[in-house]
Image (cartoon, rainbow, N blue to C red):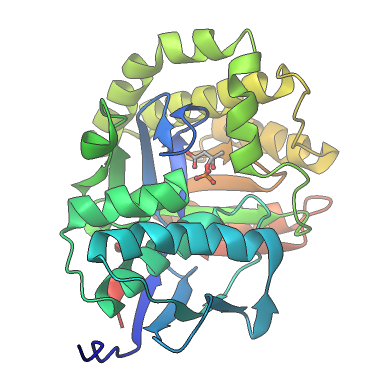
Length: 327
Ligand code: PMV
């Protein structure tokens, strides 16, 4: 039988920032989360990935920003492609080329855009045409938060009861709300414990059950705040949820402390500026960098103030972004 003729396929996806965080898995292998989460895609920051399946290859071949990737990172990508090979019932390896226009592994969810772009490019390249829900489920298996980078704009990932119903969907399009994310980069080095390792520790914290006990209320409050564009309510719940996740991280065994002194300084200042009337709030992922969320009209003024704070090396500015797409 003649083997299928594989064409290269490219896709682009954006990272996302979670307003209600995902932390901890109930099934580590399938990346089924302990809780539902809510996020916004970040336009301006992106990962572009090209995949070409090649019947002559004996293993996957992965280039990241022009450098050959081997070891654990290649292994993770290959295991992810195994899901796609098994869905397509084709045992063929691939050339993968990927690049992002922002630092990876530093708390700007690079694995989200990476696995969302890879899911889209690789599934098309092998001849599978999955709908948005199945693409989101697939991306989830590479990195949980990648499930949220598939749909457009403001996105909810429902925890679901199993593999079939744990996927993300858009709750509002990118144009819905003029929210800006000023990502203050204070350290772009690779984090010591990545989120995959971190999720595995979540259950060791006595505070994880406390965090989860009011999760549904926070999710509902955040969803309503977004839909009604109520910034005060949004700020309150976003900061509470981020602080609860970091409380869990800090009280895990071993503890995970991602914040630096400069992280705290940004948090204090933004709180003080909000009291002065600037509609801004903070959220922090698994790294020291701070995402400062602000209403669009106030973004220039706030960016100027943030750039004066100690340790702020660079500020990335992102607006609500679209979902993943083919190029
Ligand atoms: O998708 P992962 O395994 O990189 O986990 C993401 C975890 C956080 O960024 C800390 C929270 C979130 O919901 O994005």
